[in-house]
Length: 41
Image (cartoon, rainbow, N blue to C red; front, side):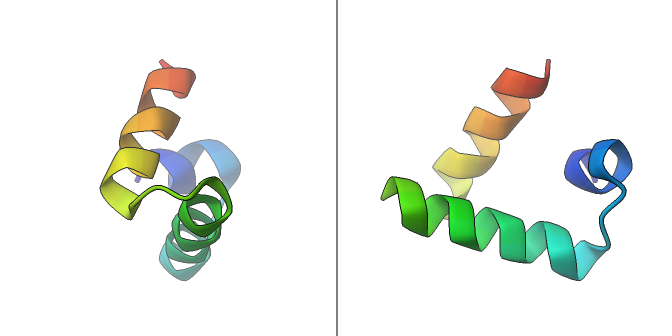
């Protein structure tokens, strides 16, 4: 919901963003989500 609110994304767009970012960084989606939350706080 943080991605959706801050970046005006739909749920599907936020999910795809997490998937792509985790694939690009070689981490799983949970780690990627935690990283994003830390960077946004």
